[in-house]
Length: 103
Image 1 (tube, rainbow, N blue to C red):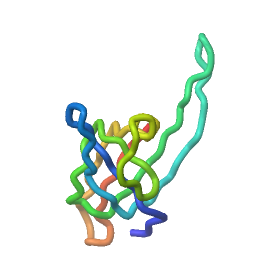
Image 2 (cartoon, helix red, strand yellow; image 1 turned 90 degrees about the vertical axis):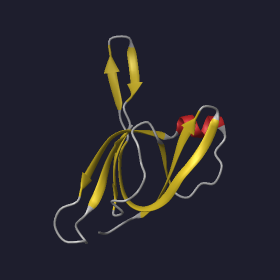
Image 3 (tube, rainbow, N blue to C red; image 1 turned 120 degrees about the vertical axis):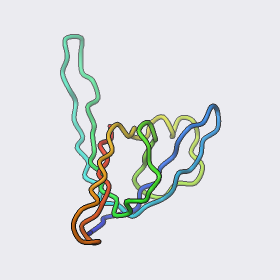
Image 4 (cartoon, rainbow, N blue to C red; image 1 turned 135 degrees about the vertical axis):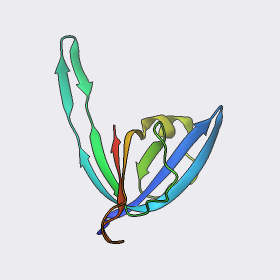
């Protein structure tokens, strides 16, 4: 699988912030606004493909493009939020990957 960078995943456990890992990934981002009845709303999304199907990533985790060590609260909550996980464990070893839907 071709990758275009590294992504870093964090999760919260109470008030603690835990680093779930840094993984090579293919990051495809869409920056957009959605116009609603009472104004604009941020509609940024991304599809993130990770070639490691054993990666411990859960819905609700925060993900950043690039390597990061200890984010501040402001940085953590400005990260994208994992809302869907698809494990594609079929085909040859080079085809297997995890696809994340994040916003």
